[in-house]
Image (cartoon, rainbow, N blue to C red; front, side):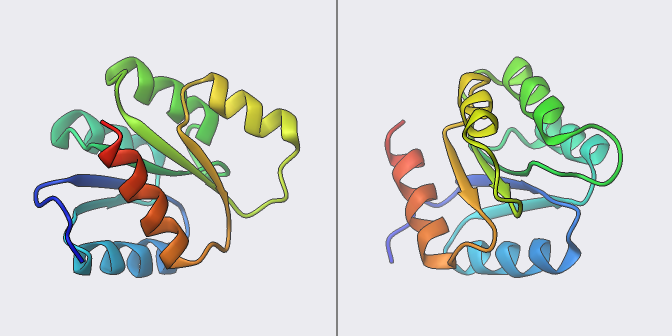
Length: 127
């Protein structure tokens, strides 16, 4: 599996198990991975690490909402690729709002790791 080394992925999700599982999977796939279980630390990692892609949970338990993080992330780094992850059967309006705010893709949880990796590869290769 050929992956461009040095690609950085930031994952912000309040589910610790998901952070570990997806983080470990992406590291094995060759990505540098940074994880945060809250919006405050996540935005700090965004500022300090300059990721190429953000995997963002739409429903965070504390701090900013996923939509607010998306807005802030795109202001900090307008060219950032963002994949929204949501475990709730979101309305089409929510998906459209995320896309209009700059999200590159919207995936429901659970999603297969294979599908997630394909989406990431497609977005990063489209640069």
